[in-house]
Image 1 (spheres, one colour):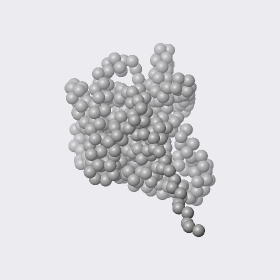
Image 2 (cartoon, rainbow, N blue to C red):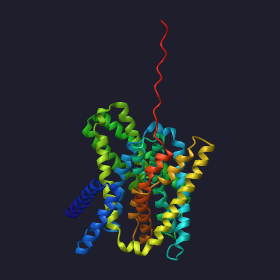
Image 3 (cartoon, rainbow, N blue to C red):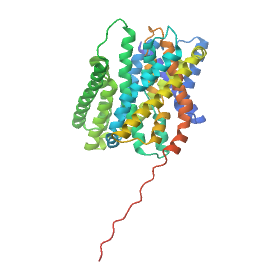
Image 4 (cartoon, helix red, strand yellow):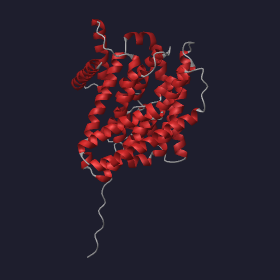
Length: 414
């Protein structure tokens, strides 16, 4: 068993390195290069009859308990906390009400568009929940390269993190309904709130506990070990033991520990940013390689229309959700400029979290392959179209942030 795990790990990392070389030589987006290299590898090993051992029903634990904790912790680690506080109201509105609007509208449009007895309403809502999760990592990089306002990048990052948490909670609730349709479920909103806030409370405790341990140890090497343990441990405890939001637990724990390290000593946090950067890039790339391995040509032949329906539904739902939340914030609270709303709509790419949830779909659901195909179609559209055109939109609607000239104090009279 250990040998099989080592073989699969080496194979995935090897394909990831090839994808990195392809991205370097062709200037292709790394995520897209990983998908292409994964797809090519899948076709080659299928041709020679080699069995990778990767199965759709064995990916959930890998994705949820190994890949997601690192990706979520890394994203939360880089958050600008002062700006997060400034935009917390709009971020929470976008990631809760906006996410629910996006999920329901996407599900409704997909249900009407598919219009098939084998694709029930719960399958459409499951699709909507998955596609409500955004991952604008590449857009954030473009924002920083274009020197766009830092507030806009914080809006993207904050909404994505909290949005991912709420989308995963909604996905879990809908998945439970799909797997046990004969069971009467209680108050969905109450359960949603308990799961979300339970994850926040656990993350606060985990962050405080990690901070105390770091204060006692005080060495950079120990800091890396403690934070890795905190990321994996809080996620595992939340999802597997307490049944609360693992993503929220990791997000809150990361913010608490980051604030503690800034207050205590920068030397304790030496090398941490580099550690999270390389580990996040590796696991992010591995996930897209797995997507490429999972894609087949038959998926596009049999589900091309469903993919187009999902792409249109996801874009329209995102437009309505951002427009509604933007209108609310303009009436009460900190307003979001209309042009920023346009960047948020087009820059709301579907990526890692949507991909992870699609790969985690149980194969006992009759429609799992249809849902996965639609999600893959939307993710590819995000990479090929939205990701490549966002830079021009950012430069037009979120121009370079110019620093204010320094005003020298007037000299006192002699």
